Length: 351
Length: 194
Image 1 (spheres, chains in turn purple, brown):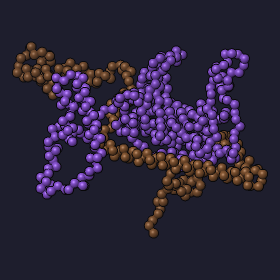
Image 2 (cartoon, chains in turn purple, red):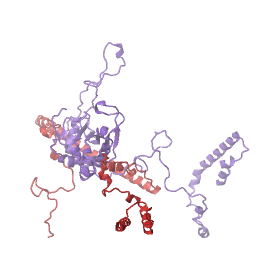
Image 3 (spheres, chains in turn cyan, brown):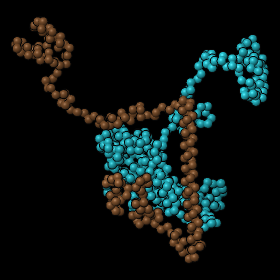
Image 4 (tube, helix red, strand yellow):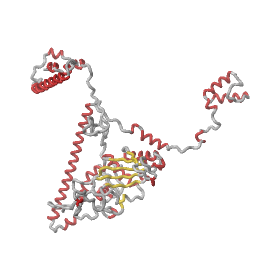
């Protein structure tokens, strides 16, 4: 069988240049059908096991040289190291080569870890989440159905012929269609999703990029993640701001780093701020994301900055804006969650 | 330096004027000195003052050294994106196995948490239903229990969650040997083996 395959090897057949193209094609087709026939016979071959064959004789076993095939090999086998270089960008499912998934260490997005479990995170899962669910529990008797509400966006009703198939009317009371807040059950207990730390360095305009560099360095020290700088999109003549200037830097924190950062803020930094009442209770963007700011004096309190205070020009230590993105759908839930974490609030309440 | 001082000392002793060129006297000694001086011309042309000229000059406001250091650090190639890790075949397979096991473990923990929350929620619902119908007070206690006044308020206004609630879990909590509010006594220094 092996010899027949070798006889029909297409490379040998097609070396003959005297054959015309069509004949060559014919020959190739014949070879492929032959090969397919051989493949069809293969399952029958597989049934005969090496255990059915009598073992080799003593003579044959003595003469057998296990290293012979590797010595006879002319070219070395490919190395065990994977030599393929992944593409830098993922160009979608139709691209011929795609980068490996981010969990693969060969991926450029691979982040090792987590290396620790934050105390705040375990407290959230073990204590805060069940307590939050209990605190906000609203009983609904079995079989209870909430009364049907009207559509959130009304349609146009009237005699005007242009009302037919017209886009729905805008949200009531403004341009923003707010998020729906559903009653909290065991499925939608709010938690912290990510934290954005942001620093706008307006002194870059007059003092040069050093301000931004110092701010970025301080942010990296505080958060433990790489900063990203941002370019101003619009010129603002009142502030002397030109378009296309690097003006701010942010860090986005998730997972382990986020919980460590929150823990540090709540338990180390906030108790040490002088004459501080807390975060204003009216903060929030109506969809469960809470923002507050830290003055440069407060940033100097962070243990990373404080222990290495001489490394920074004191006047250039930045102020920060910290946004805590939660999975809550309303500000009041987000506030309650942060209260449970230990963030103090003050002032009047609007929602 | 020693040559120059020696030369000047000799010159003062011989009553010779110190001149840069050796035109006037061509003695062997002076020739030797001339070559020696030739090797370090900057010393001869140095100004009279021995202090560094930088101090005398008016300083231009330069960049802060700390900013320069921070820039070096921020733009140092080691702080940029590291090159991807390459594993050998066996190492990659090992990583893959560990990764799958870790994912399974995490999914199991997540599932366990969800089930626990669901169990608590259902127990809460059953208790409330019992309170509503089976308490025999016409549901008065149930209505009281359902009131949520001040739940979403803040401690400053007499509602919300008190700040004492927020205490990160620790494996061991220090006992307050000095009573409630006293300093925590974490380590018993006076302990002796009996």
